[in-house]
Amino acid sequence: MDFKYTGAVKRIGDRALRIMIVGERILPFRHAGDKNFWLDMIRRLLVAGHEVEALSVDIEATPGNGLPIRHVPQIPVYFRPDARFNAEHAQFGGVNNYVSKTTNVPIIFREVRRRQRTFRPDVIHFADNFGPATVILRAISRKVPLTLSAPTYHRNRPLYDVMLLASFSSFAMVVPFSEAYRRRLLELGFPSERIRRIRWGIDTARFKPPTDDERFAARASLGIERGKFVVLWTGFTQQTNESDLEEAIRIATLTLERRPIEFIFCFKPEHFKPRFRDFERPGIRVMNEPQGFRSACTAADLFLCPIQDPRSIAAPPLVWPELLAMGIPILTTNTPGTDEAIVDGESGFAVGSRAEATERLLEMAEDSALQGRLREGARRIAVERFSVDRAMDEYVDMWSELARQSR
Image 1 (cartoon, rainbow, N blue to C red):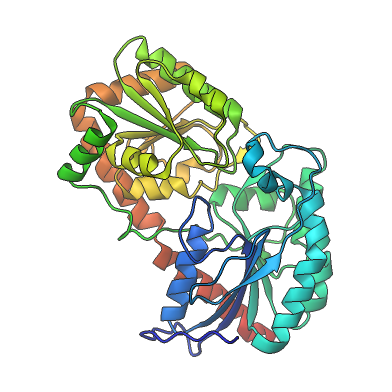
Image 2: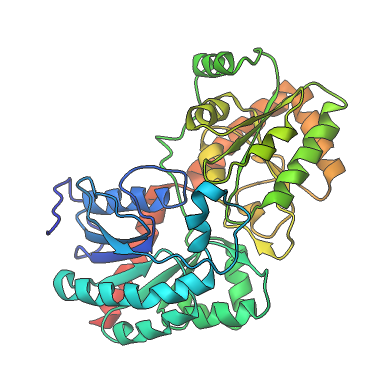
């Protein structure tokens, strides 16, 4: 089946592009994952007059619902348990390791080659890094430019840097999502001419500050009194795990010893474990249903997201610009890359210790004028730095340049 889309054409450059996008779980609807960015991108690229075909590497096939999304079967390999996923969703852990990614690369390669003959893309973009085995993609790259998204850097295993550079070798351009990651790639000796930093983005019209009535209704649905300061935590993101959750609980506990504040810990269904209920006490509640998460976002005054591992470079996680656009400032730790979303004192605070996090929390809870300034600053940073329309323009500029060079 050939997909067609008719929209108001707004082309960038002299010609529309044919773009193939390859990634894990590119779904035709919003879900609890970072591919929401690519869903927004696909829709905007189509409206701008470009032709798009997305190959969604997934365990289960999902109908495209009118969008040009094709399923590529994914084989889970249970190399070792991923502690972030519960037993009911263990299949996600089975594809979140290099063994599975390596196993699936030949499947992806065959499907890309097959679709390449029909769709004839000008450029092929990989939204996920499938590891060093992608060296076989060089057979494709001689004919069409390959580009790759590089959201996060997390040196948590031996030979990480060697394997990372090997996985980048077939790509004409690698796209780190933060300036800190770009600098790290330069430190590792990756050629500067093959790096293009493009932050990912969100729909700032969809994500916007709630009205006073909406905030009041959300708080009422959660049983929170009007004047209570509300802190949200949600996870897990790509760079957070249970140690980061436990640190957030410690910060909440220390803060509650000095002031009554409402902390809401929200979990995605695939991450929730019954023992997380043990964290609940007066001032701390645990939630694992989508509607509760939406209400908590609308009610929140602050987003708490400590990142403990100093080897990480933040993207930042997609949930950060989403919440910033809603006017919710962020309190996090001093990790490389966080400063691209958290401008200290403007859109939140980055701290160096648990004690400092507690002091900042109390400062914000007690100062309504500071709360107002941070809400305005959060929204401003999201609009200025994390618009999906800005991201699309930068991707199209990069792809257009590569396509011209390949002709």
